Image 1 (cartoon, protein in one colour):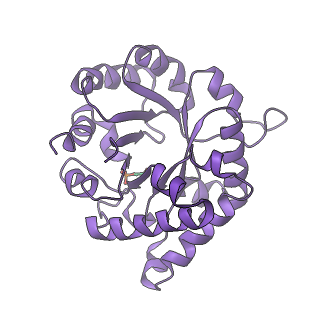
Image 2: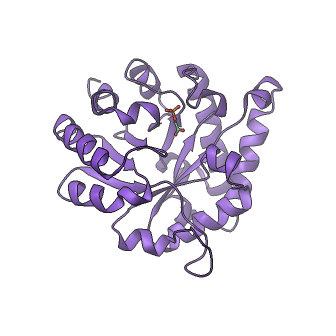
Image 3: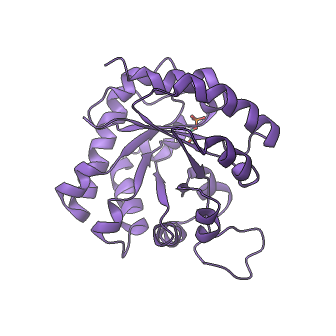
Amino acid sequence: MKNKLIAGNWKMNNSVSETKSLLTKLLPLIKDTPNSVVVCVPFTDIYAAGQLLKKSNVSLGAQNVHWKNSGAYTGEISANMLSEAEVTYVIVGHSERRQYFNDTDETVNGKLKAALNAGLTPIMCIGESLNQREQGVTEAFLATQLEQGLKEITAEEAQKIVFAYEPIWAIGTGVTASAKEAQDTIKFVRKQIASLYGEDVAQKVYILYGGSMNDANAFSLLNMPDIDGGLIGGASLSAEKFAAIIRAVEEK
Ligand code: PGA
């Protein structure tokens, strides 16, 4: 069994001073964990977080990236800029970006390629809406998101991607997918990755669950055989709660 990967997605939270105080509290709580830990911070916190994380066991991530290297794209940040700022992970295609900022499977594809070219590890998010789940089209929708988002990405590149299955109806709502629902869907995602890239890549890649994961439900979710970790929003804003999630699966 792989060690787990627990990634915090701070979203639009934490100023520089709040970043320093949260990370200063978090690091001692998790310093011996065998699990991998990432915090995906707002762009303005990258420098301060990077300074604090330098000698730690926590990796630095960003929440978005542009698909071009440079140019007239006011307000955007490129993959090279992130990697020079010592960022190693970047979230791509989060449902909030798809919903509010026009991320599409096509732009997700461009962003994945840009991130991979710059040596970053993308965390590619996919997930269905409540409506899609109720209509029974979850699997077809996820298969399309994967196929379109991964267009022209080779198997060698794909094995560097971390996947995050985040049902939209579970994000920030307090409604979590049951461990079985999450396991079944992630197993399907792994099967799709196998059909695109072969069983070997599918077994190797990390597939995370995200959507209202917290200290109370983390153990049952993370204990599932296909769930390799979590992408944590709300609960990653509390050092104690985030640490409890990270530590939840060390007891196994
Ligand atoms: P949540 O967010 O844990 O607050 O539901 C997860 C995410 O959006 O990545």
